[in-house]
Amino acid sequence: MEDAIIRETWAEINLDHIGYNIEQIKKKLPQKTKIVAVVKADGYGHGSVEVAKKAIESGAEAIAVALLEEALVLRKASIQVPILVLGRVPTKFAPLAAEQDITLTFFQKEWLQELEHGAFKKELKLHMKWDTGMGRIGITTEAELIELLSELRETQNVSLTGVYTHFATADELESMYYFKQKECFENMLEVFEQEWSEPVSIHIGNSAASIRFPENMHNCIRFGISMYGLYPSSGIRENGFISLKQAFSLHSRLAHVKKVPAGRSISYGQTYRAEEDEWIGTVPIGYGDGWIRKLKGFHVLVNGKYMSIVGRICMDMMMIRLDQKYDVGTKVTLIGDQNNSHISMDDVAEHLETINYEIPCMLNERIPRIYISEK
Ligand code: PMH
Image (cartoon, helix red, strand yellow):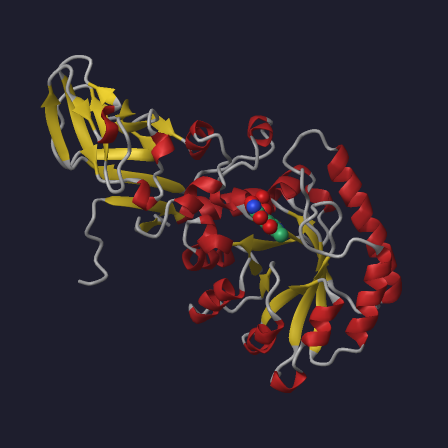
C-alpha cells in the first residue's frame, strides 16, 4: 500500500516507442556502429532503469550516465552491460567504480596520479575525453594527449577502453563548426593511433550527429534525446531525417469543477477574472511537481479540446477554463495525445522558451511514472 499510486496525476512512458526509436536509428547506422543508450538524469526524466532495460532489449549494447551514483542505481537493478560515466568522478570513488565494472571518463594527468592503488581489487576501465570544441571537459591539444598517454602507461590497475568527444552544434543544419570539431577529432585520433596500439572504442555522436551523419560515427553512438522520441532541434524534426515517437505523456484528472460568475477572480494575486459566467476546473498539478508558473497561459486537453490554464499556477494545483461542465475525475492530458488532439513536448518547450530536453527532466519525482508496453 505504501508504494501505491494515490494521486491522480501521472506520466506514462511508452516503452514500445523507445524500442521503435532505437529501431529507426539502427536502420540508419552501419552494422559496425553500436548503440550506447544515454540515461543520465534518470533517463531524461523517463526513469533510467526501465529505459535502460528496454534499450538493451532493443539492441543497445551499453549505457551512459553522467554520475557514478546513476551508474550504481543501474548495477543495483541487475543491469550488466558496460556502463560509462560521462562526468568527472572524484578519484576516491574509482575503486568502487572498478569493483562494479563501471567505466569512468578521465582527461587530467593529476586525476591518474591521485588514484589510490592499494584500494583497487579490480582493474578500472577508462575512456579518455577529448574537447574538440564543446569547451566543457576534455583535453584540447595533441601535446596533452601524448602527456596523458605517457602518464597512463605509468598507472597501475587501469585499462584504456575508449576515447571520445562531444559535439556542440550537431543539431544545427549549418554544419561548419560540426565539421571543424570532426576534423579536430580525426587529427587527434591519428596521433592517438600512432601512440597506442591496443584497440579502443571510439565514439563521437549524440542523437543529432548520428541521425545526420550515421556513416561517420566510428564504433558507437551515444543516443539520448531521440531514443525518447524527441528531435534534437526543429531543423532535424522538419527535415524528415528520421521518424520518432515521443515516449512521454502527462495526465491528470479534474479534482473540482464549478461555475464561476463573471468578474470573479481565480488563484493567487487575482491575475485572472472570469470574463463571463465560466466553467472552471481544478487540476492537481503545480510548480511543486515541476509544472512551473511560467506555464500560465498555456493549455491542456480535456475531451480532445484545448483548454487554457487561467490564473497563477499554485504549488499543487492549477485552474483551467472549460467549455462546458465536466465530471470530477475527467481525464486531463497536459502532454501527449487525447482523442485526435496533441500537445507535444516541443509545444511545452516553445511556450517556456527552452528546449524539449528540459521538460521531462523538470517534471520531478513527485509525478509517478507508469510504464506502458503492449508488446
Ligand atoms: N554524450 C554526452 C557526453 C552528452 O552530454 C549527451 C547529452 C549525449 C551524449 C546525448 O546527447 P543527445 O541527448 O543529444 O542524444 N548531454 C546533454 C547535456 O549535457 N545537456 O543537454 C544534453
